Length: 482
Ligand code: JFZ
Image 1 (tube, helix red, strand yellow):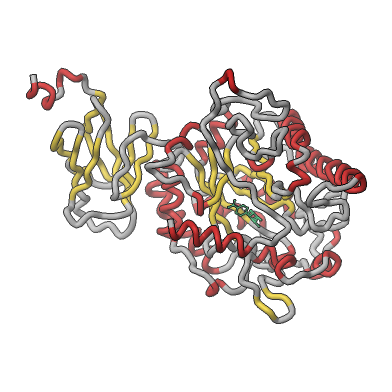
Image 2 (cartoon, helix red, strand yellow; image 1 turned 60 degrees about the vertical axis):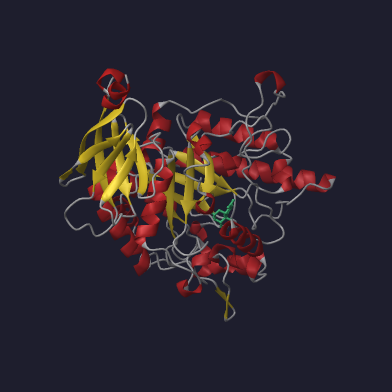
């Protein structure tokens, strides 16, 4: 709890006063007869079951990429280093938009190679790349015709987004678009609507944003997902109709496209979950610091969700100095990936490439270690879901059909991994994935001990359990009683 409060305080202190992030409070949905009628609430109840959603869900691991002008100063402005998120530097250092956007003259990522980014993602085991088409600063990685602040007007001139989409598609990697509605470069953006003038300006801004989204969907029709951000301001909350309209429009333009809950606000400005407690969009978008508790938060297994995480603390864009905060180890990153999957969610791990277009050494190493682990144990991640078994201290369960995986992060000195099985379930075989078979012994009713592998395990490992739904008649503990 203390850690949680500290995180919240840290987060609030890092957050400029102009924005208030929407909290994803979710309460039990109201009984149907007490529901209020909403024009812009959830479009659907329960999980989407179509093939595109299935694919989103089965991919499970994504690579987030935050890349924009902020990579150039890398957290430092006029000789001063700012500890906050590098992609927010404009705000921390109080830089005007005009001055900030002059960074475009220095946008010349000579080492950028879309193919090598796509290969890094694939080797890491990521099934999709989520790329910032436009972050809060307003600079577009594609040559948008609706603003001059784009890659087209830089020394590099390349359509970074187009190249990446093509390279990823060639590698069999899905592309998801991050898009910030809040745009610091646009004079018509408003944080709130307090006058007729605000209303008119923001109306023009919404048209501009809609045009950009249409442009993205038209020019890059293989995009699989739009991940909206920068939607927490009062101005957008007062225009819930627009968020519902945009979701519908994109879905008409790109059949199967998936959209995160952060886009949406309902008739009353309620975000993520509507005023009746129903999820809007196709999946809840959350953050690593709010990963659901594996015991207390099982409600999240009722809907699709995706969390994203950074390697240092809350640094998404490139920051020169990673010594300013704790930097997670590959094992800690893996644990969060598996934690998410064990509760029916996806995880997106973030990289913030350098201004020259290369990934920093720590990120390359991370991709390699995660990739090696995924190539051996990935079957416990891809296509897996919540297993429905009681959580144990040694790690997490994931499940694919009748196969249950034990992903062990904390090896017990006792040498036995205790497993509580649901009623009527027997473990008939236990085998380290791509390794030896281990003994699974029934030690009490609904309880097994699985042996630790005899070989040396130099990191988290996975045991695959084959299970059988034995009838109660064959249950020796039940028999002993009668
Ligand atoms: C937002 C952005 O402001 C940030 O720059 C980055 O792009 C990130 C992926 O998204 O930041 C947030 C928004 C909400 C939370 C955390 C970071 N949150 O609800 O915990």
